[in-house]
Image (cartoon, rainbow, N blue to C red; front, top):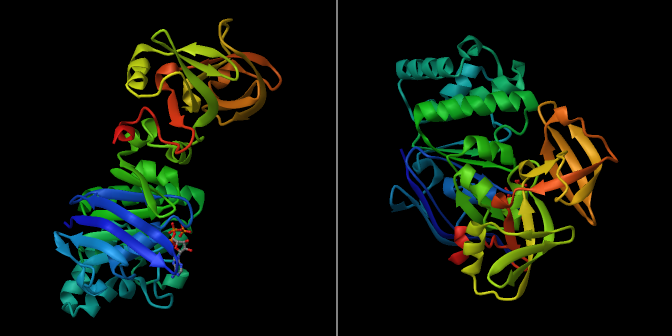
Length: 370
Ligand code: ATP
């Protein structure tokens, strides 16, 4: 399977850089997800790798060979798009067989490969149906079938699930994960949906404004976001952010917020004290909803007022006003908390993040030192 490298990859449209010096590497058989908000350059990056868009500067290597000038059909890539690009009046068999016919594969071999592929996707009973007679999920499977039938070295997928309803998306998401694990085809998958990125990718590339913000495995990105943008973009609900000031008092590092004063745990103290800042440093604090405890009985924690209760069944989201800050907690529904109720709010300081007030870099993430 293919190995893909992008080196300082740029795409300029007029005056703007849609893709700005992107560096990434996709290993053989890896499932890499590129995620980011609309317009961040993810589709353009994918289209350059496919050869459908010219490269303004930088290099794309497939298996150590620069392919900037190689025609798409010679890159041994299969693409699945959001709109499937199937022939609606042709039969499923003909749609899946098409890439093999284009390459002049013998008839017997085509029948064998189309049958194998349709079995793999559970659509062998649909081979004689026309595309216009299929449901969205079935069409999606045919599009996948057409992509995998010729055993490509590289799979590129651009928002392939976005036309499906919520339940079908989850089902197809699982099918794509299983298929990719089974076939071990190197895959680059583009989505704006952070849940897809988290659940599908071996590694995730988070992009914004043409720039790579962070590359890492889903757990690392969730637990150690490189900056404020990644902290808010990855994870549902987005990470809570509020202002604070770090103060060094006789070697004791303290955090002052609008609602409380905290003495920081030893490990955080060590990491933060390695930084050159002295005196009082304003920061943006970040904490995930599951690291905020509400409904307890302690008196040494700041008191908040519950502003909104959003039950999810397994959990409940509790928005709590703490002075002028609003913090969201993920709580147990058994606590039966109600709007307007007062509650102590505990922050798990072992899991708190501090972001630079200007650049938004995570002061505790390893990349900050680089
Ligand atoms: P979406 O999720 O909305 O598809 P995206 O992250 O895939 O967004 P791209 O389609 O790569 O974003 O577009 C990146 C930027 O480049 C956008 O600002 C877009 O308007 C611009 N752009 C894309 N294609 C062209 C083009 N052919 N000509 C001019 N600008 C373009």
